[in-house]
Image (cartoon, rainbow, N blue to C red; front, top):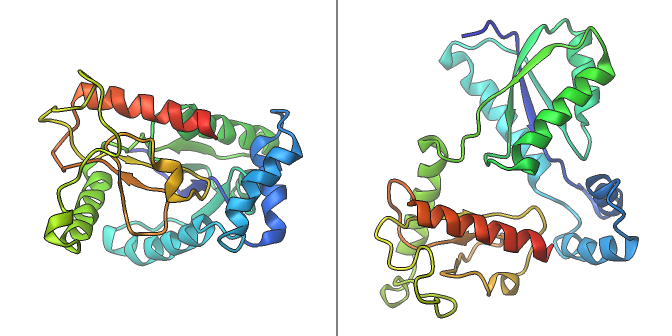
Length: 252
């Protein structure tokens, strides 16, 4: 294992008050030519929850947990945090790391998935931040995508079981939110298990009503849980997940 001398938490960032919402959305969409009228419409989702995204506080909580747990794991690493779209910005964090003499850091990105915006773009963000800092920038190695790691999957499965246990017995049999089409991927597939779709924009439950096999959790979050937990999803379930992801992206 390489000799790392720092841990870098990398995240998306989010507004922490109503006044942050529009500047944040302009950061997210910079260079894409999206008009302010459209951003204003998206902003209403944030205003409905006080203009605050939970992600920055979640990062702070994660950092505190890591500081408590690192010594027990035999790790003695300073922890840094940088975001793509909001303060603390990644470039500034990398500059601080360079000033502190960090030579090689391991980076954990809060997005677990394998896609351009969830993986490749973060690698580009890291490269861009290092280039902005210059020759003194530390080398930064991003950990692998972990969407399929047991440590990531098991808490979702446990949380789903716990949520189902709180429902009346008559409500525990999940049914399709719409009638599936014949031979649709994932339908009647014995290996089709728990699937969770997430979005970075606060979304009312009604926005998820067209998602197949949707069970909407009582929690106030844009999360859709798909039927029963199994050790792994089948190829047909993976195809279904990919199609759902594309459909969700088109709606945004």
